[in-house]
Image (cartoon, rainbow, N blue to C red; front, side, top):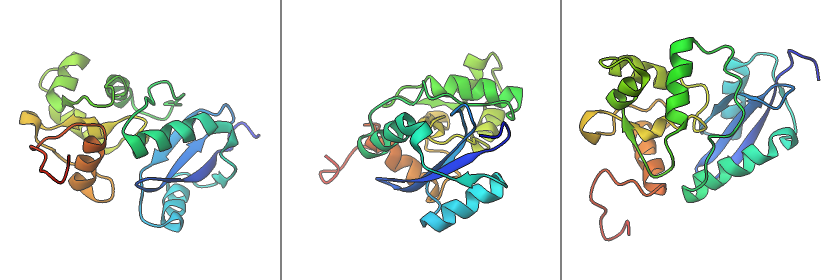
Length: 182
């Protein structure tokens, strides 16, 4: 594979079509949550990564399986998936490293992430970094909440409702579950 060539695959998951984009070292350079149909996901990937070629996901098969498991069962850990963050600004990279360490079933607030980063008071900047996250859900931005454990924003399709459903799959209920949720 050419050193600068990127490949991608659309991956069917329990919540819809996602995509993974990787380089010749099988490092993920980007991913996406569902954008609607598989063709809409392809269009988004091609817009973000011009020249990326659709290919078999064989080079990233373990990542595909871990992604499917997480989105189906709310279990599993994507913290060890190799990411290439060379195009990510330093502040965002540091935020993503902290957020990647949040295990399924747990959450942090933007303020807690900022404090762990050594930048108390930078909660808004952490939120902006989450909004730019090129690796959802490998960098699990859905596990980062607003102050007071409020849902906060979410830039994926479906917005905060999708974030809430992803958290509930992992056993995190921000509201008391109803009889139908149990």
